[in-house]
Amino acid sequence: MESYVILVLGWIVFFDFHSFLASDRLKSVLGKPQKYRLIYNIFSALALLVLLFYMMVIPAELVLPKNIYTKFFGLVLATYGIMILKASSKIYDWKAFFGFGDVPSEKPELKKEGILAHIRHPLYLGLILMFTGYFFFSPTLTNLVAWACTMLYLPFGIASEEKKLVREFGEAYTNYQKEVPMLIPKKKFLKRKK
Image (spheres, rainbow, N blue to C red):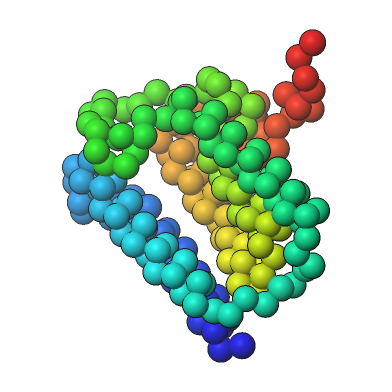
């Protein structure tokens, strides 16, 4: 039981650290956007690797029967998550995001094309599907704790990001919020084109 308490505390620290790193205050202290992105991603990756390593040393306890059905369901969810992340990759400048490319000095334009025309936060949706899929693929208590901590944090993380986007883009973003759902696409998007 002690291992799981430590794991929950680890995820709380990770998400608090993530929120701190994403704060406007830290961005202003570090100055150059490229430097900020690089530091943000290095520290986030290192913290996540520590957590994942700790998860690997906790003995596996199944909370669901592990069989072909749970594995298949998990793979389907994770595959959809990867497809959404791939669709997102066409919109974002990943070199700039990770701090290896030049971040534009002028104010960016609000992007609403591609998958962003259907959902406002495709990266979060992709991660939700991947985390959920991985839990069903390997339904251990350790993975359930990681999944639950992530799902509990995401509403706060998304709300914080939405506030920043409203500050950055103003009325353009509030109108976008009214037009496009946060995570679940509208029915017309889900229907196949004939």
